[in-house]
Length: 230
Image (cartoon, rainbow, N blue to C red; front, top):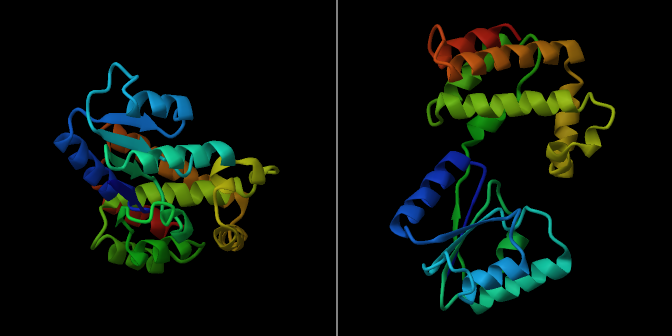
């Protein structure tokens, strides 16, 4: 049996993954960075002395770079072992439909963030403070402020990255789909580099205060103040 857990709501998908790990305490966890044909065979054929369970958890199997030949070999092994093992693939992003059909009989769990969050992020532009606060409040009805804050930091970081000379060499930028990159490039042009640096510095300050327990008020109020000033 294969279960694929994916989507941009990483917090929810992680919670579900952790629930599965608790139910299968003797499971084997493999990171997509480390997986190879040899390491996978060691687990499924009993060569791994530290593996006693019948559940294999693989993180970022699809998204970590592998050669086409190695990827096909790994898929063949997983398909062969579906009757012997419960195989769980967790991805920290949404996987395209074509990739999901590689395992035809897999159970797929998709965790998507509400569209109100992306509307808020896409509306980030100078001199729109009141509108941004309203969009943030709508998004926060169904999303924790910490998640919105994390996504806001990511958005500003990406916009700022597009001002770099070799932005196409930055991993986070390279992973963007062409339509995502085009939309971000238009949004970045609405800001000067200095404006984005200022917003990024304020976000960094809030993040530091939050992590050290020194935040003077709630995260929501701090974000309201930040957004009004953009």
